[in-house]
Image 1: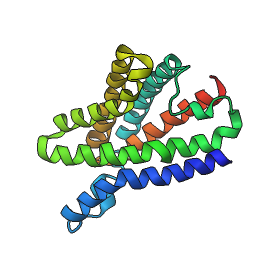
Image 2: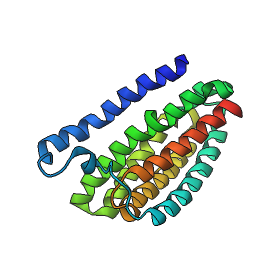
Image 3: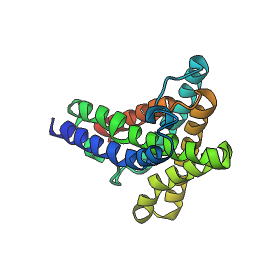
Length: 200
């Protein structure tokens, strides 16, 4: 239970930290035009059937990539290492980690803030590429000293590709809602947590 409580505290801190810059930007530039939640894309999904299919396809791709990466990083400390071998006792903490500790704050920052603001200036394609690359770098750069250049670059490329896909689903299938990428991200992280708890 201590692990779950730690995850709740970490989640709150991450949500505040990752939302602070977007909130300040919205407050000084767009608060008179729309609500913060709409501005970052925390809104109802439109085009539910099309979006559901896109979520299934991208989630499947994300899961395959995640499991391959986790398997190749078996002896390297990563975000799910703390769940290793805990089995059912880790389930509450894994759920909190997957839904609120990583996916929600990262979706607010990358697909809710960076992608949307850059798309207004550069257009969707360039903005999606930039947010995808930044997402990949954030997830891969910490592995350079642990696994070497080649594996780290592969991690960056694969996580960037996943981020590009999530940005596309949000903006082109869901009318700008970040909920689809939040679902994809959370489900994939939940499976990664289960993998650590039960199989590593």
